[in-house]
Length: 362
Ligand code: ZN
Ligand code: ZN
Picture 1 (cartoon, rainbow, N blue to C red):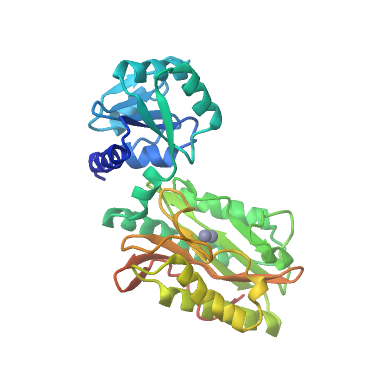
Picture 2: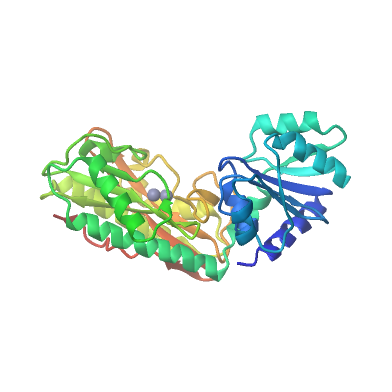
């Protein structure tokens, strides 16, 4: 990964906005993704100052790790009262207008720094680093593809041993342990295993409920590998499902395919959403698909660009996004089919490979 080129890109954008410096502040994982993107640092706390004299700052817990991970930047150690130290450092650099990430910097840090550094104006910059992260380099797409492959394998493993009587939360935990044993850094988010009526809740949390014969079980799962995330949703039936389940499954599958077919560089995210949404609306289930069609995936599992009805983003070559239509029937069941894709000039490369053409019945 060419961290220096990324920092140069950020610095160019900061100069365009007449900033003298830009600070990325990661305190106990508050902005780990941006800091990792720009430096390769994986610890929980560190600060990057991008300016004509760039600097990496961390505390004594991480100086040795920073020496190994952060290449091409001087590294300084902060004392425990890091905010007054940073304010003093910025004053000593003589900078007047300092850009600061608006998405992940807390109001507390912003207000304290403003107070501690009179003469320095902190200018919130929504999306400055996040926008750089949208277009992935080939090596980033390969990492996401590797995370997607492990996710597919994990789903095969867990579906192969799924049986009535298992508790949802045990299934989710077993899968997370399996992912970690296979080399995942972490789960990309709290894994969702939702059975029966729980599958009708798009962001369900696995509970004590035991899987019953006749249930539809929804898996929405992902891992983080080498920093990069994956995201996959499939449903499987435990025992023969009612006809309505098959009907909704094939409707959602058609919407998923319509969404995938609409993906290509230059296409507005909302048009891709509309292509899939029309399939569901035409079948009379329009009010049962409440969320956006998809989202960007990278160092974070939800990032730009958006692929929803209110998205103002257009897709570009190198974006990685999900296509995940769903139909949710409260109290009964829900179906979502989610694939991860890399956007190309004339379409997309599908990174998810778990079969979907027929509903898997166990
Ligand atoms: Zn998902
Ligand atoms: Zn998703």
